[in-house]
Image (cartoon, rainbow, N blue to C red; front, side, top):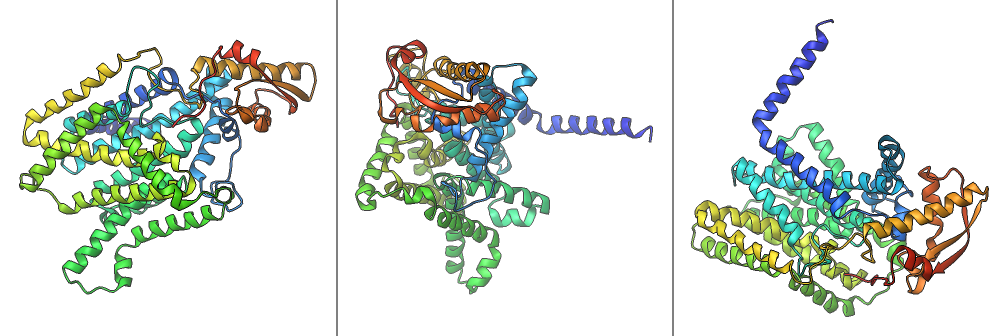
Length: 517
């Protein structure tokens, strides 16, 4: 027994050396991407808790099970993990690093978002390598290009630009962006196995159970996001069914379902999530006219495409044009099923999102965190086609220089605020922190005076309901601060005063537009 511990550490050392030798490049790249994203989400463009919805979901945790009694019956992933991560920041990171309450939340959400997005980027690299599309070194370089395209996708000038990982607030980051990214992680994982059928044959039981757990959260996240996985599954089922017909294989529908039980199961769970959503509280609050909203929804989608960075459009346009030309000429040895699988997935995703937006809110089709489900498909296809072109002729790598035109765009109306902030009013992190610190001070002063009720003074945003700091939801501040142990007693709101003086003191003379797409 005295030799067990040294042998254990020796075994771990040998294992780590083996992993570094085999996957050292990926390990270094993963650490680098995570470090960059963490720096981005905490210092460069910090995730800041500000809007009324943020203050609800940082403390109001739910059981991770779909329920028709919830306002959002199947939004299990965001409504479970956002409060969980927030509690981790407030109760663990805050005392551990002796940092402010506000930054502890930013750090916690920055770590969580960076972990998921890093997994997404490295999944793309591994897929490119495992499918023998690229070497390890080339797959990492393609991963860098893939990541860069996310950040320059919507750049139009030198200030207040959106990007593919942007959202209106931290709540929407959890509700739309992260679920979409999670769905693409699963899709790329299946692509590594040449589809779901091969995955079910090759993966062991523990692996399958883990993926089932991830799929559970991916589907029970958001209808706008879960379509990514479902579109991929539907595309593959359609192609398999087509192949069966063309090869005149006489199989009953039951045999087909048995062979594709995993895909059928995913679609069934996805359809069940729709049933839950349609009978939920939020669905009952929606009363838009679908047929009137449909053309408007299509129009907003066209707008979302047009506002893409002109140099990204030119870059992708050249790549797709030349690739299709060479594909038709027979230059590439290519499996048609993969080509049609991605094409059908893009088509299904686009049609579904347009139809859903026409029913829910047609303006959603102009939101970066909604159309990301379509745009990522296009980026995956674009980088893949680019890789095939440079493999055939290295001179095609010069196409990347087109993207350098983005640097020129950054000089137009340039300012220090290049990227739009994570709140509806596009307030800087310093401004949003000042507002939060003022609210905390008011609650602490009330507690110091041994009072259980507070006359809360909020900045006046000059809109009905005072969004994003809604008067109707002001009780959320006290509830969050109490549960996160920032204050020791439960303090309720007695009166709310909206103060323009407070606005000028904490934010400035000009309140920015709270309506953004």
